[in-house]
Image: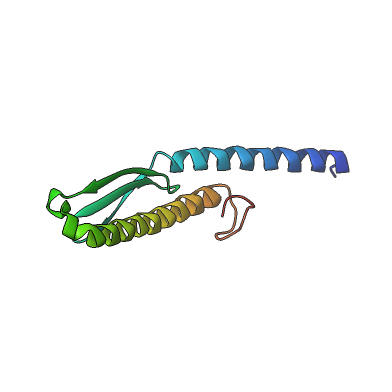
Length: 113
């Protein structure tokens, strides 16, 4: 039978391993790109799976003063689409990491869910 000290040491080592894997997962999310779009692709927003915006592309045909409100609406819609895709991709990646660690799906680890 293991001593209390051995069990505590094993639990601390497991916690450190999980923290390392979660940090690696967060770093990986910064390398995965998603693209949101609106207006049939006239406005596109690229983001990381963590939700950091990388770029915005607005079709030239929308660059008219009378189209200002529509462009603003399309940019907002494209941002929201990118954010939704980033959230989904992030959730998929975190589920894969948790599954690889033997954690039950949907287990909320503070700061990673």
